Length: 273
Image (cartoon, rainbow, N blue to C red; front, side, top):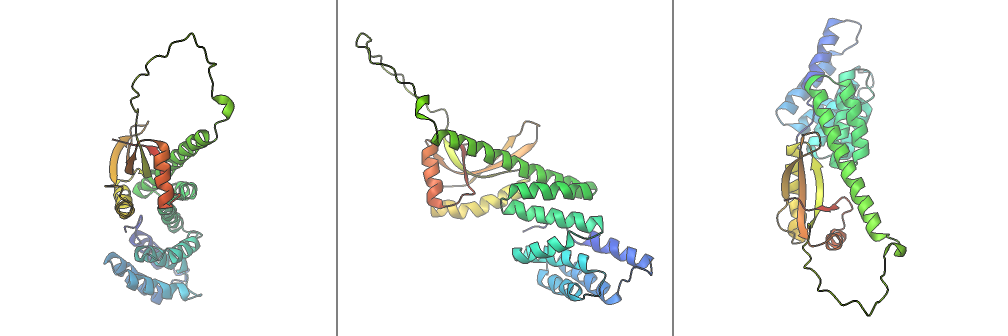
């Protein structure tokens, strides 16, 4: 899985700062291990990167512990050790260096997006975008927008379901029987739209495709066919990628399928075509 922000810019910029001043207290051993960790990470050797950076993090006297924690965090994320990634990135998000702090928050926001904890993701990514510069800040803003889109989608679906299931009886009008009125043949009812189970709406196409790949296993298990990834324009003209599976005649049928799957993260939405 790709990392939102890599380590090289952070570590190299901090190495320059350390070499420029004798008061920074940068130990040559810590510097060497962090540089080795960066090279290993860039080469895709995440276990090695995690090991090298962990040694610096374990040294209570090292002045490089925040950068080391960030490296351990992103390496753990790549290895799928999400709990450890969260712990290390939470620690490095308290660094005094804005770049370390911003990228740590951005990675935590990315994890919250993966977990579909969209409000937390929005807060973290928005904060990160204010700490970072250039393309890093732009990417954090895009992912924060991704989180807000999913928040709005979830809120609309929850509101619609609440209205549907909790409509008061008094809202149903019953006409009194009148024997003088002849029955009229009812018109053919044409369905306006169908419903689907929606995995999410993503501003980032790569994340949408990754979510679709994960969801396909669920779709195969429950006979829901192919997972669909469909580009759509939002109200501001930006492209969103809608990921859905299944096709149902009505909302009730879609909701029953969601219950069978047992995933509260799925939402029932109008099918996109």
